[in-house]
Image (cartoon, rainbow, N blue to C red; front, side, top):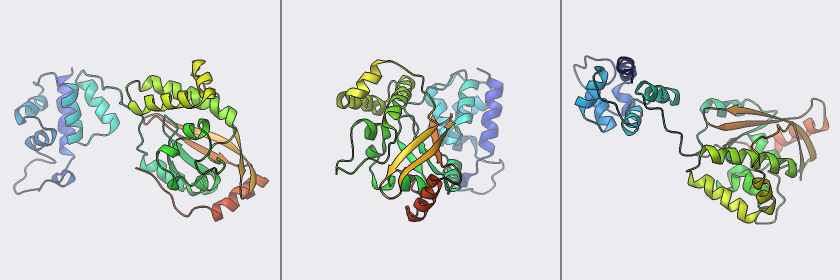
Length: 283
C-alpha cells in the first residue's frame, strides 16, 4: 500500500468535483476547491475521521468495499478506480458480468458510419447498440426484447416465434463455431455471473449443435472476414466483416461494408434509404 501516493490521488480527485456535481449545495465561505473531506465521507458512507486519515497518508488498509464506495463518491472512471485499488494494495475484483454500457463515443461512431452496417455486441453476443443500416440489413433490434437481441439464442435456438425467417444471423455454420468459442472464453471470465451461466445452460439444453461445439472446449475463434445475407427486400448482400475490440468493456464493434461499385453496395445504399430512421441504444 503506497499511502503517500494514495493520499495525493484522493486529494486530487476530490478537488476536481464541485458540490453541484453530486447534488450538494455550494454553501458560503467554501475555502477548498471541490468537495470537503466530510462531504466525500458522507457520500462514501464512511466516517470523516477514516477518510481524513487516508488523505493524510496515515490511514489503515482499506477494504475492497470501502474503496468501491470512495470510487463512487469521487466519480472515478474505470481506469481511475483500478488505479485507486492498486495504490491501496488491493487489486480490483473482476467485474461480476459482461458490461452492457456502451461508451457515448462508440455510439457517436456508429452514427458516423452511414454507409456501413455497424453494431456493438457484449461478451455474450447481445446486440447492445446499432445504427440504422444494421437494423435495416439484419433486424429492427428496437422491436425486440433484450432476450431476443442475443445472437447466440437466435442462431442456435431457431427462427422467430412468429415463423419469420431469421435475418439477424448469416453464414450459420461459421457463426456457430465462432460464437461458441467466444462464449466459452466469456464463461471463463465471468464464472459467477448468473446470466452467463443461464445462457450456456439454455443453449446446451436446446441445441444439439451447440452442445457438440461446446464439448470441443475450443476457445480460439477464427476471424470472419466475409458474410452473406439473404435479405427479403434486396436479395443477396455480401459484405466484408471487420471487428474492433473494446477491451475495457469486453465488447466488440462489428462493421459490415460492401465492395465499392458492387451490387451489394447498391443494396446497402437502398437499405439505408428504406431502413429505420433512428438509432436505438437500449439501457
